[in-house]
Image 1 (cartoon, rainbow, N blue to C red):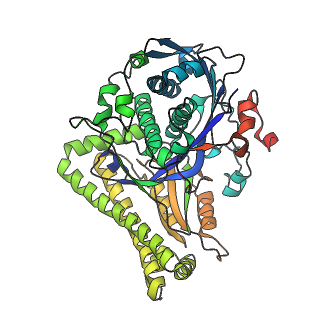
Image 2: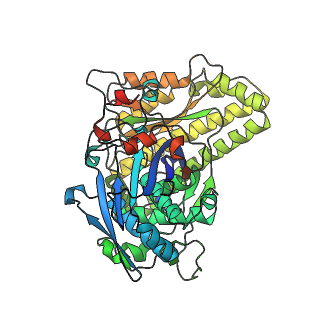
Image 3: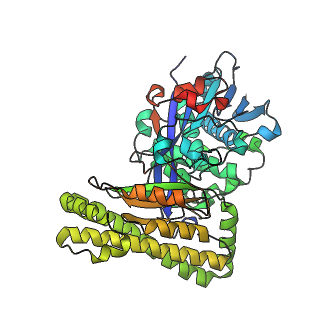
Length: 514
């Protein structure tokens, strides 16, 4: 039996570019986070038949799906087996059908050989992807208490009943499954996949984008899959027309049994000048030093498709006003990104002055940053941080205006109150509602001075703990400094082997797993 293949992919938060990333004329800033989805592929156990695939999500009750793969000439059809209609998993089924069809076009002999052993696939997510429930009357978990929880907590609910935190779990799941399958069947190599801009990683990206779009039934902006594959970056979407011919087959997966996928997905395939290409833009990005991303799960809940649909309807009916507003938002977003780049450069130029500036700002609210009396590089650093703060506030105001024009709450009043209180604290740079907005999450950027006795993070946690209008729970996730999707060692991820090998894991008591 061969060694297991383990691939992880990160979640994301879109700090700038909500709605605008749907249009290739604009870009967005997407940050990949430290919380990840993991896929483990092993040769099938004795109970798994040849050409059979068992997919498990052991954190959930009744979350096992079995598939059989039918091979006939060049056709590859993945069929559900022993799945009731209520227990179907469209995302997993789509990932298997499309990726295995692509594999069969690449390595037909090895594909047939490996598939004859059957496959066992387990997929699990870090705790931050799901709302962590607490008993009525108990305080919300803090970052400290969340860090003490066992990894991959059993959730004791079905997949359809879980509450998500909006960090791109489906994109991370799809990316990890697709990449692991491509590695398992030798379509891509570990060495090639490790290169950020190599063709192996690009192939995994293109395949995951197709799977995600088909599973959702529409071609979205793709920033969530892009972040899962490439990590944090400034993103410009691909031409959606490249997937248009394949989207017509979404209702019946059997249509993909015979459709060639390699000409569309292979980045090395010959380019037809008359057809659209994978032309997405990916410019690597990191937040400046001593800046921490803090996320919160807010008890509320908005339908992202509903928000996007109404904004798009407003834009189509009011193109002149909409384009003027979008241009203003884009300029503000670019100002914030330029500020981040300037700060990173200033840190490299004069680290001591940068750290001194951060230390002084840690004790002051942003409203007082412009009045700080310093000179030289330290003054330049303070001005750059204040510029980022101002750009963030301008973007919030413009996004609220867009929501008002479209008749939706992109930043609902309760979120405005929560963000205003948070951003007014000493050492807090900026904040907002991620992605399409709504009332289910917020992000905040805080300073991390090494010498501060009371960190801005602690002030933020107190504000959230005392907020009356909503239950606000911080998340452990911070900016990931790693590449996006990556190969892992099973023994190197704490708790991973236990979760994929323990029977009835979903119903276990988390306290007994510590």
